[in-house]
Length: 207
Ligand SMILES: C[S@@+](CC[C@H](N)C(=O)[O-])C[C@H]1O[C@@H](n2cnc3c(N)ncnc32)[C@H](O)[C@@H]1O
Ligand SMILES: Nc1nc2[nH]cc(C(=O)O)c2c(=O)[nH]1
Ligand code: SF4
Ligand SMILES: [Mg+2]
Image (cartoon, rainbow, N blue to C red; front, side, top):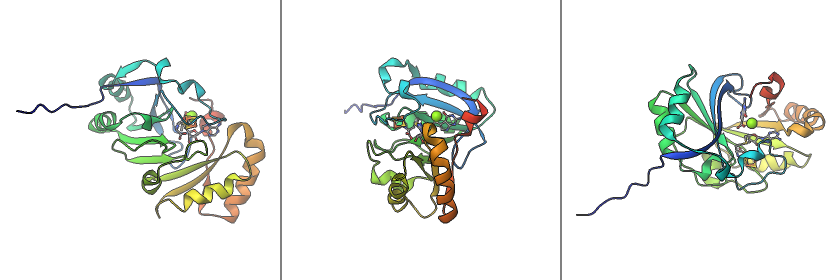
């Protein structure tokens, strides 16, 4: 008789979780429960959540507890973010969320292998650690952070790798928004396959 070993993830490092308004991209403006997992090996110089990078600084929490807290709110979109969520195996978390009736959305740089069952994948590729090609092909939206002028040409390289129905967003890097937003406006007017994504939660003063 053989004994099968099940490698099911039962705990994940959670930096924070909160019920708010999705501030970015296609689902901007919708109520959503955010689960921010600890751990990131990408190291973007302008990252707005550097406290997330060290997974060991965040408590490992049972998936059933994470999902029960999410389910206490009426919204049924769960956004898994981080940190870089794909540093973890997300199959158990996403199947538990879907069993509670959630649509599962993810914010990812795509730089670690894909896991989990997703209703929406937001891919935000980074120069600091490139995304894997298989994630570019399945992303529902591509969200490029614009930090300087050269990022527009770089954005087009990833648009060429995306599927035909992938939504295309340009988002100003927060500290450079005053300089980059006018350039993004001009670029979208000239290239209307792109749309602008502002981080509206930062203007609304919600998490
Ligand atoms: C903090 S990241 C976490 C998820 C994943 N590691 C990623 O980068 O996609 C969430 C989103 O915020 C964006 N972001 C991070 N720092 C930003 C900044 N300073 N200005 C604008 N967008 C930023 C990322 O590109 C990503 O789309
Ligand atoms: N309100 C709100 N919307 C968001 N969309 C993506 C976020 C993220 O940090 O992944 C984020 C976030 O941190 N807050
Ligand atoms: S990949 Fe995401 S979490 Fe990691 S450093 Fe870049 S923006 Fe921050
Ligand atoms: Mg954020």
